[in-house]
Length: 118
Image (cartoon, rainbow, N blue to C red; front, side):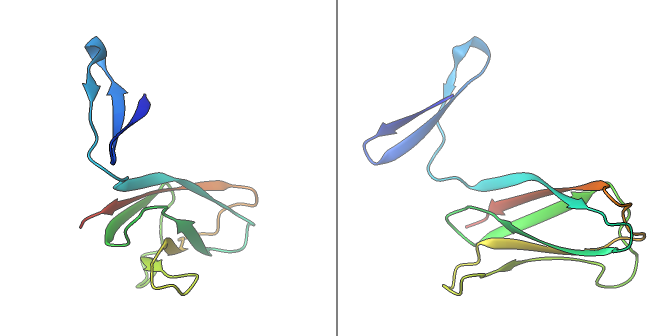
């Protein structure tokens, strides 16, 4: 994989079978990753702030866990926040309450994705 600057346009080269090179039109439009919640054995509610790193805040997002979230209302919320007050919502905030507290030292993966829509 390599990056070429052609005039004012950037191209991402991805090489697949047969050495074919595929162009990518413009700036990054998606961010994704895995964050971890580390249990203390007593807390079941957590808040994570994840900077998405995209150039736009016109986004949609989704998250997933491998631990059961409480069925109570408002046990899982995710939304964008403007942490530095500049009008750009650069952070994905996840608020979650699990059905039971993760064990002390237990790492619960949080799978997240943010995509620019316009």
